[in-house]
Amino acid sequence: MTDRLTGKTALVTGAATGIGLSVASRFAAEGARVVFADRDGDGAGAAAAAAPEGRGRAVTMDISDEPAVEGAFAELAAAGWSPDVVVANAGVQLFGKDARIADLDLEHWRQTIDVNLTGTFLTVKHAVRGMLLNGGGSIILTGSPTGLNGEGADFTAYSASKAGIHGLARTVAAAYAKENIRVNTVVPGYTETTLVTAITSDPESRAAIIGRIPLGRAGSPADVEGIMVFLASDDAAFATGALFAVDGGMTTL
Image (cartoon, rainbow, N blue to C red):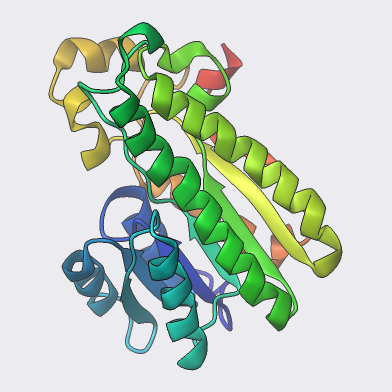
């Protein structure tokens, strides 16, 4: 660890498991105070408790519920934990329910969009409000190759939500650059977490996906930590509105 984030306060959504947990834990190890935010309050609490002393704080937050998001940011500001780094990472992928558009139920479309896109919008909205009061900051969104190409043809809602996230990041980056708020998107490829258990438990599906990755292996949450640390740090002071792929080369094909 390099202490690249000493002096910063970060909030990471979806921090109880997977990429969010890995990134939040790495931020704490790099010297930041970190808010582990998740709708699973117990999971967020356990993750925060494992951080170095004084660097972890948990908050229960359903990102699709604006009063919950607004209340969490207000609570943090009152406690002196207003974040200058926010990672909007939480999301869902409804395996067995998301489908090609002719077969997709409106309920499952709305469920996905409400969490992935609207939840990201609400997280970014209230992050920006706080950063405007505090002189700026860094916002990092979690995208997907399915929002860039036809990789997720059987996941209409998920792919559309991630494409929306990519567009949202660019728009907010342009709108708030003069206020010293940077907004970037990290695009992990196939990363083995509990979110994709339906794939990891099916050897044929897993092999088919890995066969399309030039580096020849699945990603892990740890593969995403480094680029997140960079974007959160002052080393990335001139980076905004960009997409950073961490996908083993998948989107080069």
